[in-house]
Image (tube, rainbow, N blue to C red; front, side, top):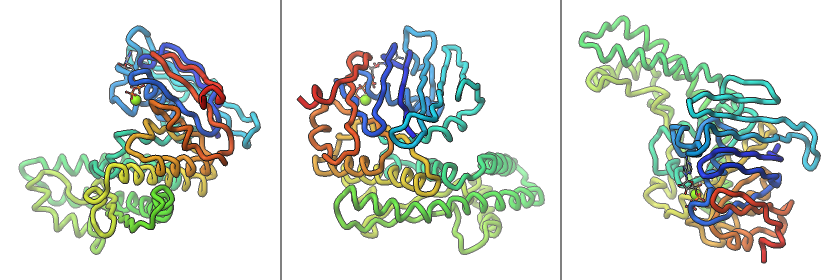
Length: 376
Ligand SMILES: Nc1ncnc2c1ncn2[C@@H]1O[C@H](COP(=O)(O)OP(=O)(O)OP(=O)(O)O)[C@@H](O)[C@H]1O
Ligand SMILES: [Mg+2]
């Protein structure tokens, strides 16, 4: 699966762009502020229905455009054959109206687009997988849980609803213990179901992530990953809720449950964030995202699209070269940006299965560059 055509209109400084990307590696280069990240943002908008940079989509729309639009042709035929072409598109007006279309049909939730176009991003914010909050890691894990384990999103919504009800009750001056027990029962059941889905996915994730990190860093590394489900699993969640009552009452919030789950990343027995350098953290977050894509391919036989913003930043030539080799072997479509095309092209592995496509971005104008010109 890959995007064979992309049209962008009115995204940040890109007023209009049309490109025919390579099914393998696409290099997008240009000076600071030229519009490289904006191009990735456009592709992300197509796959996720939102931006990776801003919670307010209004700021994504070009200041002189009434709306933004991304349209693409998704090709999910066998490699090299242009069959099964599906047009997909997303449009967002200045007044906030959203429209998603798959094969000319309007769809009403972004999750349908996400299923059609699994998209994974690595940018400076992705460091949060290692140095950010547990919520960042839960969202990451749940991407795999939804795409691979096909967990029902409704279960997550229900869990969230019951948690909210329980917290509302805890906020009252006088807590009705009987009513609390009713919520506890339902909350514990839902939390345990969420935890089961996460555990199944986690069992697939650990070996893939360890293998990817080893391949990217070129070292034998002692990377340990643990899944904390959100409570100490020695006891049942209902017992933990009971034991945590005084604490919950004081803090007016539920302190145990699947909403407190986290991934613990350790190297040589110590927290990864404390021992790894910035470059090593970047390799680790790349390994985490690449592991997600590999599991998707292995289990669901699906490809995904990688958006790698400023890939070369923080990486030395050896590590950058290993990353590109790993990406090329994975055979997913990759869009990577950088300010300098030579750095990226000079470490591109020779055995790459198809020539990369090169695009130059200048003041929001995207131009395809023949590879022969790009390497000059
Ligand atoms: N809504 C908007 N309308 C028009 N231009 C915008 C809008 N939002 C941001 N810009 C401008 O778009 C330009 C492109 O930004 P972008 O982040 O894509 O650049 P970049 O090529 O990734 O740069 P860098 O190499 O520094 O990461 C910036 O100059 C920014 O000021
Ligand atoms: Mg950028």
